Image (cartoon, rainbow, N blue to C red; front, side, top):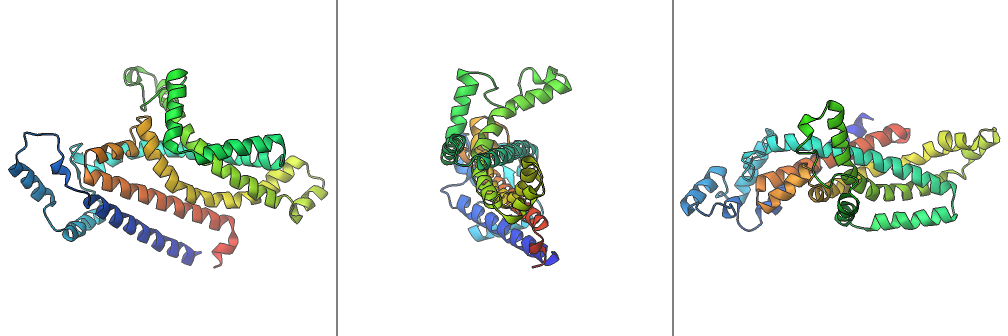
Length: 322
């Protein structure tokens, strides 16, 4: 188990280094620099050159990269020219909002996916199974930004059941009680988290259905039935428990798409998280803030994959002995 964990930690470190390197060069190789696109037209060329020299944009690319890596190793992600704050401070403020959105979406997607997939497997071949398969294929195929826009139009404007954007009621939130503030944030969470969860749960349900169909005909399930256990006990205690193993691996596979989807969904719903800030930073050519957001997103995906592997090793003892 120690060798397995050490190998996964080493792999995760290499992945984070690759993400940092690729994101740095891709963004820096774009034409111009942050001071070529600042909105202040009264800034003279001399001042712009002084700012480039101050922040190191006039140095060779490789030298910039070495300095950047040294700063990242010390926990410094640079300075945001669009927000006039250090990138670390900006991300520390917005990251909890993104984590909240992702956590709610992850719980909803796994809950919906496992329940729907198990329900389909137990009614294999029925009209219910075929209808749900078509619905799941629809959600599995559509892009996240399109579903976010449709949800915004349907439930934010045409049928205004939920708040259309933001994280809180900008006018009334400060005057609410603690319970009211929690309900306010929860109401603003509904549309963005459901958008992410519906997309992710479609894939989970398909995996869960296939895994449960593989498990149900096996010997230990027939033995449990032969012992006189009820069908619900057979499914919940024996079949479903074993069928969850392939679904656990989906946690690691889902995180990259979930992080990417969060960036689009946050922008559509104006959820003030890391994706919303990164999208605005791209428009403002704020290189350090974009690079910092990509690095933190890469670390989140790597950590999630590592936790998924750890859960799988705990669930499957054969991995611990390798």
